Every structure is written in structure tokens, then in C-alpha cells.
Length: 170
Image 1 (cartoon, rainbow, N blue to C red):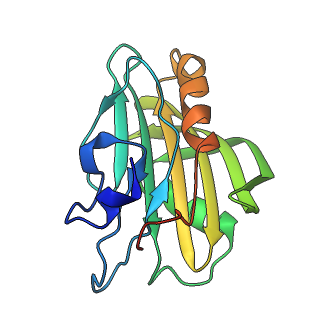
Image 2: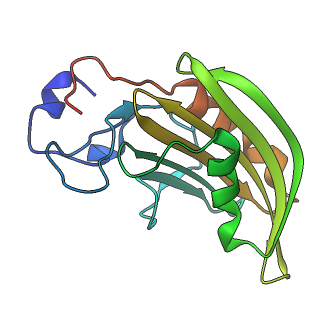
Image 3: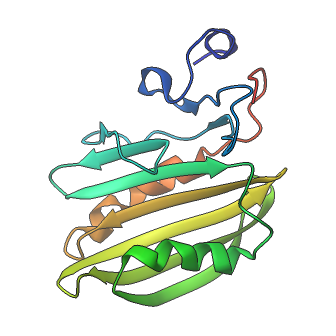
């Protein structure tokens, strides 16, 4: 995707490429324009409430979702932002947690085993990072039996995270 697209009237995840384009001048929850890697074969673009960018892999029953917020998120810690992601789950057990570098900032990388309504088991891998006043969360969710099979795809998406995006207006 080139910078020419960013100057047109395409906002959001235009053409399901490797860049999410923020809508300039949008009031309230302002999004960021950012780039990311692509997950590879088997992943289909998914429209999912609460995610600006998402893919679904039907064989794995797995989802990769990305989001950004540049206003109204406060100044909480990366740990607190990660804990906010637990709100929809009944059980939330952290398997691992580490601070890593992502887009030249400290990011919290967390792997979690969780359940919805006490029945549906899922595993999640999460990255939360703040840069230039924007908060990014990157999520991978899959059932335990398929979790390992989709992680490399998620890592490709994370490895390609770019912000700010040169030549794009945010």
C-alpha cells in the first residue's frame, strides 16, 4: 500500500492490506494510522467489533485482532491496559509475561489461558504498547489444541508493526 491511498478518501483497513488508515479530524476516540505484517495463508479478513484489523483462520478457529486508540485511554500502565482485556473472561490465568521492545518502545507481551462463561477454553497472546500518545493492542486467540499452530502467523503480524507510518496522515 502506498502513500497515495492515504491521501484519498479511504479510511480504516482499506483493501485489507498491511496498513490501517485513521480518519483525520475524527472526534472522540481517535485512531492511529499504522502498519503491520500479514499473517499468511489460511487467514481471512474479519470484521469484528472493537478491532480495527482482524483475521480469522477457520481450520484453527483462531483470531488475530489489532487496535489503536490515541485519545481517552488515560495514562495507566501497560499491565493495567492488559488487565482491561480480561474483562470479558470469567477465568484469566497468566502463563507468561515479559517486557519486550516493539516499535522502539517497551511493550508488555502476555500469554494467557482463559475461559468464557466457565466453559469455552481459549489461549491468548497479547502485546500492549504505547507510543506518541497512542495505545496499541495486538491479540491472538485460539482454542488450546490449535494455539501453537497459529502463533507464527501472529508473530509475523507483530514483527511488521510500524508507527508512525511515513507518508500517511494520522
